Length: 254
Image (cartoon, rainbow, N blue to C red; front, side):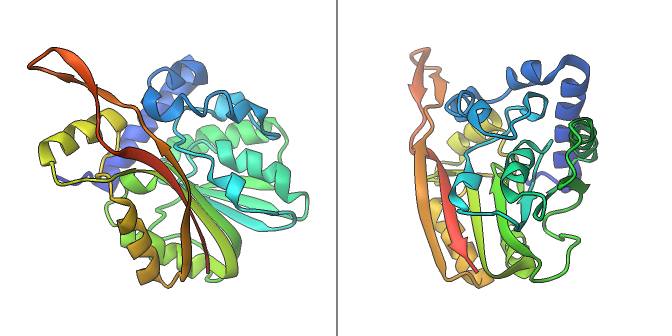
């Protein structure tokens, strides 16, 4: 059964509440470590990194594949508390801007409060459905999304919206978890529960198919990172690696 958007918003509101009450470091300890651990030492090396915004929700580093975004208008779709937003705002300069959109009103409020505390003037977070982005067509010069697409109930609608709000020539980069074989439904349920992918994990070619259907013509997988996630085999009571799980980053141009 697919999770509703309300289910998703409520789940991520709980994450915001944990970060507010107990701190970002404790929230990071609750995440799927197989996905996040490869990133936890990399994030603090980026200019613009703010530890309080790092809630362990990232799947990759898609912003590193955008190229030069100086003076550009950039969007982060499914921005969470705004971790990637604040890194990118340090790259766009005072004449550029970064706008993050997220379904969780509490994550957005949490992130905006921290952005204000740091006196950042070229970044903001907006509470919005990223399948219906409150933005004019052909607006953004660059777009990212990080570890979000597997949460969405209508992935094609999302990519259609990305195409709508991207300017011609805009670079778009998406990082998300994929599975090479999705035919084992019982195993899929275990994977979805362990990873928090509330609306299922796609195969890599499905993402490329969505992009083609939306109008993107030049889409490539620029990074593929294996996820070593273990589950218990109840017959042997031993842990086994799950098959063919990866984080991929796709780069495309409108």
